[in-house]
Structure formats: C-alpha cells, structure tokens
Length: 554
Image 1: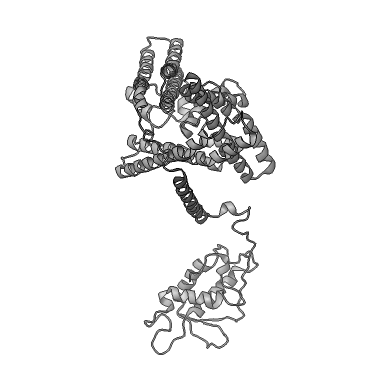
Image 2: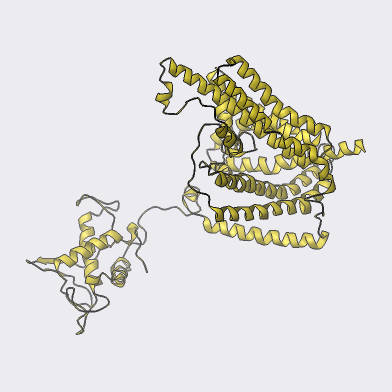
C-alpha cells in the first residue's frame, strides 16, 4: 500500500498528547496510547531525517512555519503529527535487537527508512476510524466541469475494442450474405493502359518549376524588369494547371487517374506561386536594405535574395507548400522507422480499398439520385453511406497526411512535421478549417500557404478581414472543383458549392458556440455536418451524374 501525496493522506488530529524532552544528544517523545507502552525514540538526527522524509511524502509543503492550511490547521500541528507518525511507525521490539535508536538488524527499523515502516505508520495513524475521509469539494470524473481534466485512455481502448468487435461481425455477415465483391481489376486493369497520356503529362510537370527558375535567374542578372517577371510567372503558373486539364478532357481516362494528375498539378501550382511570391518579397527586402532600411534585421530573419536550383529542387519534393531558402533538418534517416510506416501505409490502403469495393460501391449502385427521388429514401441512403464513408475518409487522412507525409519528411530529413493539428476537437467550422487546412489537399501546409500568400496579402492591401476569408474559400472552392469535376467530365459545381457553403456555416457555428458556451455542442455540430450531411451527399451526387453522363455517351 502506497501513501498518496494528496492532503487526504496527511496525519490527522490525534487524541494522544505528545510530550517532548530534549537533552544534549537525544530527544525523547512520549505518546500515550491505549494498550501501548511508552517508547524511547531514536536520536535527534535520525528523527529529523525520518520526519523530513515523511513530510515530503505525506504533508503539503510550506515555506512558512506558521502558515495556515485550507482546513484551518497550522503547519506546526503537521510537524508534531509527523513526529507522532514516525514514533508510531517504530515497531515494538523484543530481545533480538531490532528496536532502539538505529541499532540492530531488524527489517522494520526506523533508521533504515523501510517502506513497510512508513506504510505501517500511515495505516496506524492516518487511516484511523476517526480520520476524516472527506476533506474538500471534488467533482465526479465524468462531470462536465472535470471531464476534460481527466485521462480517458481506458475508455478510448474500450471504444477501439467495441469498434473492432462490431465491425468484425458486420464484415463476416456481409461476406456470408454477398460474398467477395472486390473485382480482380480493382488495382490494375487493361483500361489503365489507356491512361498513358496522363502519366506522360505528370512526368512533364517539372518543366514549369524549371521555367520559373530561369525567370528568377534572369531577374537576378537584371536582364528583365519586375513587371515582366510578374507577367511571366502568371503565365507559367496558369499553364501548369491548364495543361493537365486539357490532357484529361481530351482523354477518356479513369476517374482515379485524372484525380491523381489534378492533385499533382494543383500542388505544383501552389508551390510555384509560393516560389514566385517569396522571391519577389526577398528582392523587395534586399532593395530596401540597400537603401538603408533595417526591416530584415528588426524581423530577425535571413531575407538574402539568392537563386539556387538545389533549393528549388528540394522545395518541389519537400512536404511543404511554402518556399524558403532553407528548412529545419533532422540529423539522420531512421530506416527501420520508415519500413514500419510503409507497412502501415500498405495495410491501411488495403483497408480503404476493401471498404470502398465491399460496402460503398454496392450502396451507391443501389441508390437513386438524392435530389430526384423520395426524400426519406435519400435520407436512408445517406445515413447508410455515412459510416463506411467516414471510415474511408479517416483511413485516407491517416495514410496521406500522417504516414505518407512523415515518410517523405523522414527520407528528405525535413524537420517541421506539423502537417495537421487536433482538428477532431474543433468547436466550429472555422476552427476545423484552421486546424485541418483551407484546402483539403495537404492539411496544415495548405493552411500556412493560404495565410502567407492570400489572407495577409489581402489585409496588407486594405481588404477587410471577412472579404479576405471569402477570397481564401473561393480559391479553395475553385481547386476542389477542378480536382473533381475535370476527371469526371462533369461541371455542375457540386464541389464548388460544397466549399462555399462553409462560409455561412462558419457564421452559424460561431454564433452557436458563443451562445451555448459549450465546447461539446460546437464539436457535435461539426461532426454531424461533416460526416452525416456533407461527404455522403457529394458522393451520391457525383456518382449519379457520372453514371448519367456515361449512359448518354453509350
């Protein structure tokens, strides 16, 4: 039995009177107790050490000897009580030499500071029937005021066990009822061979970073002026997006191949904009320093303008969208760690494929258009699709934003790995987008890109804060539409409206959060909108529009 370090375990008020007699070398304390004899205590040095040790484990610390505790008792009473604990901890001895002031070879000797002696003292005095069992006001662990101050690791483990058990039963039941629904051509089919134009387009995307480097090199040598540089960068960045769009529209490729190419093209566009914008700013600071301005030194940052191809090449493959000449780096590559993450990546990718083929595809194929059928039927399909869709989305987040980006960062020795924050605790839609991203491609790096290259530049140019937020969501909506509508060859702007509707949702959830002042309310509203209403509806809309388009062409 261990003695708790809380005030409850301190010595309690004893009815026994304590008489202390001090001599030159020995202090004798007499504690009359029922059924016990007067005992001789050990030397003053031993008592002082034991008393200090007991005070550290059983009594609250105080620098003032006369300080008063919360229960109204003084620290002098605590000190006397600790002496009583020490004396009572000393076991009664017989003729074996185990008692006495530090002598003998017994196991329970006070001079050895044995733990059993301390526990014995605590049981004998601190836990007497007369000791108060309740000393201060306390909340239950699951009370609303104390729930976030408690650790719920055990409940989390219980939820994991329940989820595994329940879903294992559902998987077995589904396999027994419908059989194995995964097609042999899920990972690779003969149609994938017709996507080679998209693959070649992806391989030629590095042409655009090389063109941007040449432009920066020319302006560094002062061969071209600033307006020409801006115009050339606009042409290069625009071409980096339009070129893949034209290739996808001219080829009847698979939707997955088109989405992958558009994601790569969007990343290249974001990186090139950051490279051009950052280089322009570094040139402006360099010119101001030449004129005697000390802005860079006051900001304590290195803004020296230098065009280096190695820096650009590293930036294009690094897991970040914000360009800077140098990044925090790690010392080495943990090969074993990388191997373990790759195994996890393969496993969770297989789980995603299984859920999509075994659950989501049958549900979507057996559904009607959510805007053209019965309302109750559409609600039932959306609710049925929400759970497997949520599982796929969480697996996608873990695979892409955690595993893949950390693997890439480890291989490149990239130090800053804050790719996401605790978005699952978001109380409002605004907080979710701030901790997740402003464009749901690359999580926290995209949020940093939006803040750095859109939001604050708008504020510096006198644009109101609300308008700047709308502009950021507008850019996000455009790229969502490009990455989904172009590969599907459907331009009904479902993704665009899905992102832009977040703006009124931000205002609504902020109002509800301020009104209820309860973090749980906002968090539950966020999860309901995100999991139940949003993603399943988009999946159904795009699937039926895609099937209708294919039916018309056939």
